Length: 220
Ligand code: CA
Image: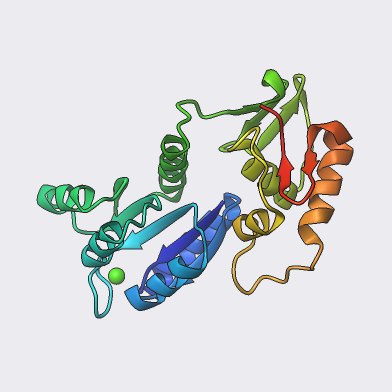
């Protein structure tokens, strides 16, 4: 899952970025609305974490403009503005949630996962495939196959999560790559293929289907 972090404060930004990385997200960090616009135009993000007090343009007006343009990416506002009126304005401008600074990183990650879940139409915290044989708990970073735990690297887990969030749907390799790697990360040309190969080795080759010319899928 790839997140765009919009935060002008160097210390807050570095801490949040680190927390999200540890939780297994790929993170791109930008400092203002212009950079955020450019990033959103080029990458299909799973979610945006948006500060309100930004240079030049306020986060609230940035969000309102996105929604007006039909940009539906899930947005979590993170702000020190704790007045009820600010929180209401944020939600009415189209935010999916509003967290108050200073926030606990674990709570932030939990809220982010909840937003992703709601947007994915999944009420439960667990992801399922193969008629329930394959189960993923994103919050705990655990995968079980027929009840037995499967040891996966962080990247393998991230690749599998992209597939399991849309079971039965073939996802293009480039889309998987975009979800799993942030800017500036070294991505070998066949990195995603290597992770898929390892996943097939660990889960069984039939678990991850290559739909020729389209992408990869796990059966629901
Ligand atoms: Ca700020």
